[in-house]
Image (cartoon, rainbow, N blue to C red; front, side):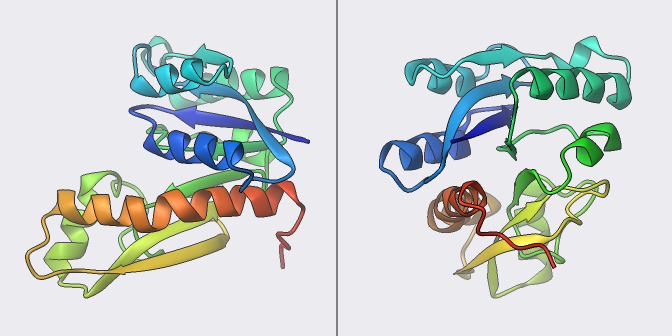
Length: 200
């Protein structure tokens, strides 16, 4: 069984999708063993507690820079013996001390079809605002490995939704979460835990 550690910063809807997938047997060969939050009081911590998953809070604001913060995260991941790290709405870009130590072991969800609308500054609703402003007819989400550059790691899975002409960023965000993120993230995690992802 692989130890899955999930990093969160907010409500934890993707975390919930993973918890539900684990309970229903969609995730094979792995178990969520810890949830680490970048700030206290976020609802994702409640979701973990409601499912008897151990939690840790490593507040980003207590660290002066991303390197010192990343070192604290790295120490926690090592403590938890993480085999896979999932960034589920984790709003901090980790330093390479983490990405190198866990190369091809950190998975992220990006709410667009990489290489479109990705990289520094593209997160949350900003991604969907940009996609709608550009006039794309199809959008979606990408599950990818994390490396030193924002949203530049190897792509594992992608899924699409059609953009409707009266979409707002919020409506598009919800459609992508429900139809792509919540389905593909557990699938990617399961493939990883079964050693079914090949890096070429």
